[in-house]
Length: 399
Ligand SMILES: Cc1ncc(COP(=O)(O)O)c(C=O)c1O
Image (cartoon, rainbow, N blue to C red; front, side, top):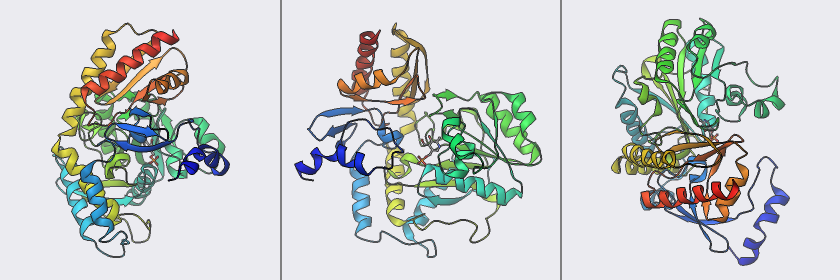
């Protein structure tokens, strides 16, 4: 890209963008490992992973090689035909899901799509088709995406409110409240859709007892338990899937973000003994395309090679221990599991994010007062230490 184009990226984007995004005045042009560079060559330690996508960091050699090889072999192959890469990915995902699902003897079925929201759309439609019921139960503070179906399950009224009347009716219950779950889940409930760790909602962990109770109540009442692992899954929370912490197996699992190493992909997986959905009840032109499948095979294989869940568990616990041992001004709470870390502040998070950016560290908000760290799972402990020291310094500066 020429210098002239780079220098006008901000004004050009501002001229043409939809307006849907609140943007930071920073133009990123390159990434390598856990570092991204702006258009003036300045490096930033990336604790956003592109909203949790870059589990393996940026420009991981196995992913770039897989994309490049598949791009010169076959990029597109609609689901009207079979494809070698798609078949290979199904097998790999089945192995991953099956590893801790002793009670699922049938294996899993998959609908492949292009984002986390689409994965939840597919899961909700599958639940409707597989149960013949209409009711949906989700959790307060939950985030499941912004397409109309997924938006109905997303709690934040700022996101959902403008589309009232267009989204499905969803009963939102308090997170971790077993009595509320017992009252809301009925024999009309098709699905209960929750996150085992709420990311966007502020980094809140589900109680294992609540997840086990949801599992029991869903089974008793014939509702399907959908766990949205779009952000928490694939190793981020110290297990392949965050629900493993409670020892449960959902009926449906949704995946997205880092599943294909940064290439857009989402997946809804359901227990194969639930059956298939009728032809033409769902579909996607790009779903299961060989390029994304090849990238996903490379990403999941690389995550397995480094035992990403164990690494996230170890590095994340060390970071949270470091934070907890400090007397950090303005901090109300430190939460998290694995490499999803939330630092709840007494004040708004935006100034902290801005000051961190000046110090060469990019981090995320989760709501108005939570600083959220979603580093690549390959982050070196010394890189994370450096970022934590910058966070400590910023909190002191702003105190
Ligand atoms: C838990 C969860 N579900 C769904 C989504 C939506 O994913 P996407 O933005 O890829 O549609 C997100 C995105 O942040 C998420 O965190």
